[in-house]
Each structure stands twice: as structure tokens, then as C-alpha cells.
Image 1 (cartoon, rainbow, N blue to C red):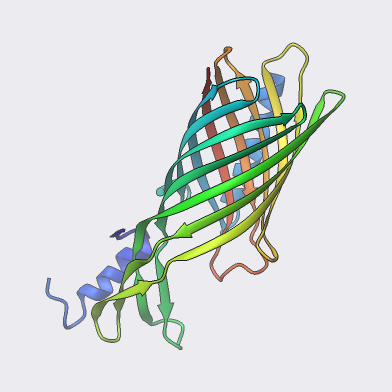
Image 2: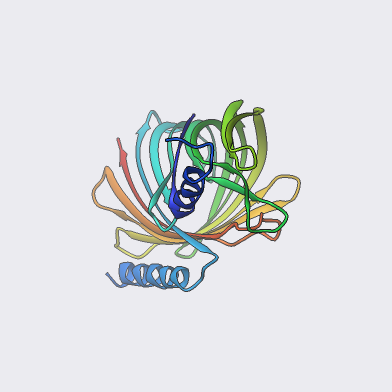
Length: 274
């Protein structure tokens, strides 16, 4: 785990610490781009919104008519794309059960930059404790079942994904302003089970390599935790090369913690198939 100072709030806290007594030292593409820009404009006019950029690169290998495997790396940002949020790498395998039904399973290693945490005294103004932002790892496995059907030029698919994420035990270092000392706080390992249900609609333009899509995804863990909306498109540059661009919006959950922001993301992807 790697901890470091981040954001203007961290600098303000550091100044407080330093002054304490004990501190010494095409039309289709144009339409998608327009929607993306409208989404971005919404972000900059709301203080409870955050904006990030996600980049991913993947390689897919088709083994036979039923089996394929792929590897993908991803990088995410937050804080209006100014702060690194996550690096990840994953591997998965897909199996075509029937013409309209496939199953898959995979593993991802996530290297997350956890946000800083600040607690205040009862007066709501005086700092009590501060935990700087820290990098730490998580392990994730998942199993999917996806079915799809054609309706005219539309392809409608439903994916059900079971996902288990485990965060190993770690030591979180935090500063106690009342004692003016640093302290180590042991955080126990934790595992989370989530069921993700995604409904997606794709449109096939005649004689075009451009394919727009829209999806909504629900995250369940005993109750509804998150909802994600995505509008995007894929471009097939050549037989083996494909790029994608999308806008993703995740509203604030009614049970969200105080200070949590609605997320707006622009994503860019590249995939090589062979």
C-alpha cells in the first residue's frame, strides 16, 4: 500500500500540521460526439458531479468456434480527470453455449487509489482525523451468462454477472489532530458479492463499420446499490482492429455517503482480435 498527499484539501491539512507545536520539520459518429459533449456540459454546471477519463486496451484470441480468451488493461482517472484512480489488468475466457447464448469467467487485479478521508470535531469545523489517499490492491473474479436476440436492425442483449471482490488486510496511516501524531490503523480484509444485470441495445447501420449502442446496468448486493447508463459506439477500423468511444453516467445513490459525487465518464477503448 502506498500513501501520498493529494488535492488542495490535503495541502490545507498539511499546513495545519506544520503549524502545530509538536511538528518540527460521420452522422452516426457526430451524433455520439454531440451526446458526449452534452454530457460533459452537465458535469461542469453541478458541484456534486465528478468527471473522469477511462482508457482500455484489449487483445482477444479465438481458439475455435466456441472458445475465445482475452486480456485487457485499463486506466481510470477521477477528480475531473486530474487524479489517477485505478490501474487494472484482467484475463477472461468465453464459451459459446448456443447461437444466442454464451458464458464467460475471468479474473481482474485492481490497483486502486483510495480517496482521502477526513473527520471533523463536533463543531463541524475543526479537523479531527485525516487519512491520506493510498494505493492498494484488490482481487476480483466474475462469471457471466449473456443472451441476445435480433429485432430488425437492433440487437438486444441481457448479461447477468456474478462478481466477487476481495480486498486484503492493510494498514491505513492517519493523522490525529488532537494528539498531533500519526497512527497506524489495521483494516481487516473484506469480500463483496455483487450481481450485475446489464440490458444493452445495439443498432446495425447498413454497410457501415460504425455501431452505436446504449445500456443500463444495475448493481445488486441484497439491495440496489448502483445504476449505470452508457451511450457509445464502436468503429471497426479493419478486420482485427476496433476502437470505441462512450459516455457513462452513474447517479448518486440514495444511500450514498455524504460528499459522494455523481460520476460522469468519457471512455476510450482499443481491441485487437486474431
